[in-house]
Length: 252
Image 1 (tube, rainbow, N blue to C red):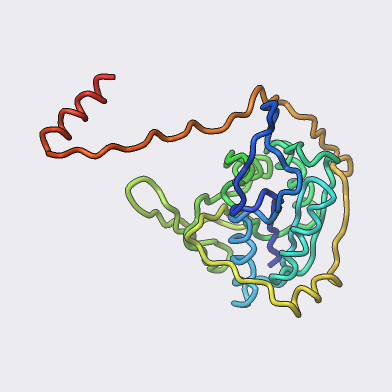
Image 2: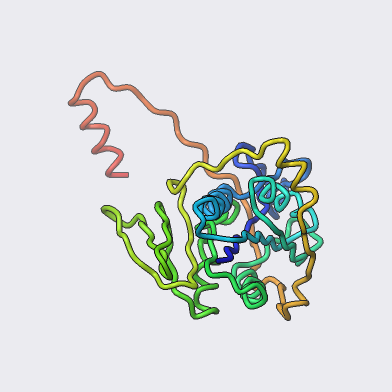
């Protein structure tokens, strides 16, 4: 079985995001970029399936700018076998929207014919949580979202997913789309020898036009602002004072 894993280049989760002075977006100048954390978990899940003898090949794909090659090389160093970069924009500030991403991924899936596509449930830069579901709809495949456990049993994927009030375990017939949550695993670090080996692994480059997909944005950002600063807390001297304060706040 071949496993396809889409990965996205985003601002590193340890970096404090800065908004541009004119409010037109996020400042990306000299900002450290890395693989979306949910996508790292998806890559790790695919590698574990291969280590268990349930997958023969892992293909990673990224859609965006030329510099996304770095993200793909990271995935290759972790243990992926091949990479595909779909260059869809020259501007690092342009975020390719989920529907366009899903359409391009459908083209990749049609070419590669994987048995399983493992995606991060969302990207930390836009938090849209839509690409995996859209891809499943375009392909007409089964889907399992928010996976906290994943196993393959024959021609079915067994997924434990987090739902309101507990956990739900489902079986989906493959080929299937699975989106993964934070609790699925802890991604491995790429060792130096594997980083060196990754430089020699195949990385194909394509464009959105190769798949006949128009990536022109349908949405426009009106304004980007910093979240409001949290008000300082206060101390109270007694339960009665606490109750009075809570009533006061509730009446506002």
